[in-house]
Structures are given as C-alpha cells and as structure tokens.
Length: 137
Image (tube, rainbow, N blue to C red):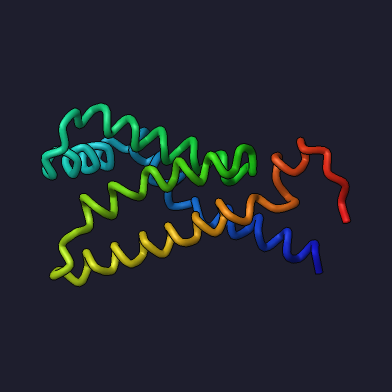
C-alpha cells in the first residue's frame, strides 16, 4: 500500500505542475505565446514588464522541474506559489466574466494542491528522499 501511496504522490506532483512547465517552455519557443504573455503584463499596467516576463518564465520552469524531479520540492512549490499569487490577484479579477471566474477557480484550486505538496513533501519517489538516505519501509 505504501508503494501505491508513494506512486500517487509522484504522479500527482507531475500532473500538478505540467501546465506551468508547458507554458514556461511555450514562452521561450513560441513567439506568439511570449508576445501574448508580455501583452498581458503591459495591459495591466505593471511596471518593468521585461523583468516580470523573465521572472514568470523562471518561476514556471525552475518550480516545475524542481517539483517533477522532487529535488528541493518545497522550494519549487514556493516558486509556483509566487507565480500564482499575482496571476490570481492581478490578471483574474474580472468576476463578472464567467471565463475569468473559471480561471480564478482553477488557479486557486491549483494553489491548494501546491499548498498540500508544500505541507506533505515530495514523497518516497523523489530526489529529496533519495539524497536524504532514508531507508525504504
């Protein structure tokens, strides 16, 4: 039973951050995605749009890789949270629009999952566990 639990934590970690990994990579390799993200930043009146764009890509990619590999998993979860907070507070505040409300609810749900990961840790199938030298049960 413990192996199934550990496996479900691994699969859950990967599924939780796949969107961030996909969109982080998309901002680098797809100029249309990069321009859209940059436009979103500038249209909401944020100062220093280049800084925030680069920060978003960094937070998405480093946080995702950290969580997927289970290496400094809690730090990766914090990076994802740092990315999500302004997304929720700045970009998804138009609650009259049902599409915006759906995105708000989706992202707050993801935030809940990241908080659970932050609390519970990466599980047995992670580099954090492997490098700690803990014995298997």
